[in-house]
Image (cartoon, rainbow, N blue to C red; front, side, top):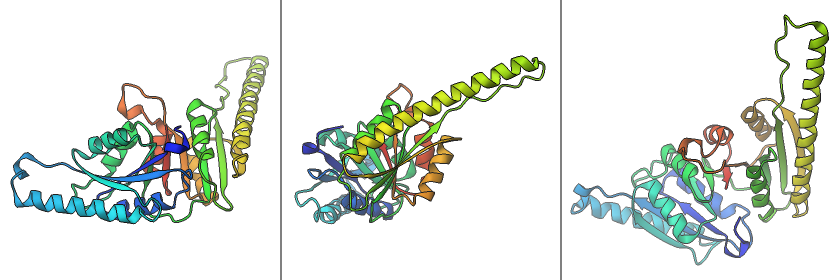
Length: 293
């Protein structure tokens, strides 16, 4: 994660309801104290529009959307700039993120604004999968961010989520729930195996599962200490089951304001960049989803 001295929040907008929710979320989110923000509006102009009245209308709409968004975040970032780029939405957002050195992109989900429906689910997913930085996806407005749930499995991807949250500015009463869902072994079917062999297998599976639980508790304890030292109150949960199901259950139980997961490392297959849990959370999370890279 980048130094807090240059932490940059890029908000992508098209003026839609979900884009406005993303703007409000970006302003209220507990970013590092030295964070700064900017806005991008991506509009793609078809060749047959280039000399038309429609092009002029799209230009005016895009400029108005950008200026309105800049005003919306000016209370937090008075010097925030807004830029309109003529490009396909995903490419325009990603290129702007690289240009400004963004540490996180904030955008809505399934927006339907006037500027080429910028923030459709397809666009949000494309940005989340391909972004060079972290991405915060917002479905509806959240005005407080006191309760965070982190999906933590002890991997390097999960470690980045802890580093990211540790660099935030904890609000009063800020609380983080760390969840580690242990991947346990099941005892294989052994109908034709002698009883003594079955007992040996059951004991070995039990031993392996206990080792995995112990490793999970140790890893989550280290993460909890790192977060606690920065001012967050911590809950540690180690459980078994389907990771996404357990994660969403904890989000509901903790009344979370945001869910944080880590993206998988870059591969050659775009659809695999996030990992199954992050992909599932992108579809199902009832609260803003922060995907950390």
